[in-house]
Length: 240
Figure 1 (cartoon, helix red, strand yellow):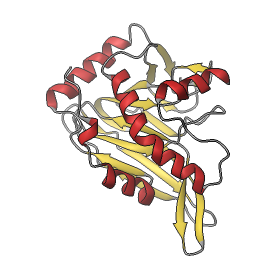
Figure 2 (tube, helix red, strand yellow):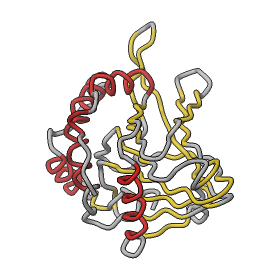
Figure 3 (cartoon, rainbow, N blue to C red):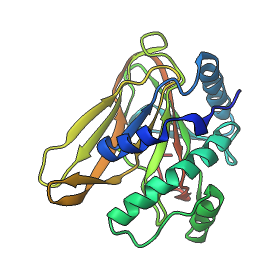
């Protein structure tokens, strides 16, 4: 699969969108051929990855497959490149929210910190949802070293491969009702989203908000989705 040019993305716009909304859309990150190749790669990974039933985990209905470790290319290369561009945003958020720790410049160094605190489990996964399946609101935020951003990719086509299955986020602000958001993903689109917490600026300064994400019920067909995370988990902990 031909790699994508992460450096050429509009990182000024991406950073502004993440600050304002808690997510940033990356429309047509993959072309049609790349999207289909990613769906095939995810299907092949089912033979090697670790499967979990969402119903057993009380997280909905359907299957999630944690991709094998080490991650296959080009997903492994995307993880390295996106991390390096996102680390400055993560550090700025950490400073605003008064966190004690910061994120190193490279993924290699960050994963070394993960291993030092017992986080060695692969979290990047592919979801397979068929008619009636859904993924409930959740966060992949377990562990002492959690990166605040992740990437989600849709390699299949709404209204052709499946119907329903919208990508949904909620944001809970202090003393306010939850804010729902639906991300209009099409085939090859991706989004950078907040894993759990982000700073939001109000009239009296910054405050901390809590976000979760989900996939609504699939009405027909099969929806394949990829969640790429930059931190690892304590073994046995996570969505899968």
